[in-house]
Length: 91
Image 1: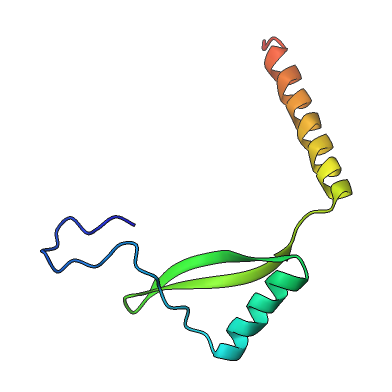
Image 2: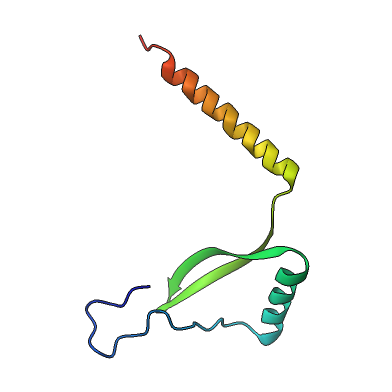
């Protein structure tokens, strides 16, 4: 985050650590799940309310190998369709 250009010498520190406003138990639960079960903490939504930035967090599990293959097949098929439509002469 870059410093606010219209501010004076008392501008905020752009790279300072920010507080995560959760209860200690919630923070421990989230860190435990991310360490042991292979889950990842993902920001789902960022919004501003009453002058504060709020972040909705979600726990997500990575894709399995067969899911990745399926996604790749779908992307390849879509590319083929686009390629064939592009090369087709329009009348």
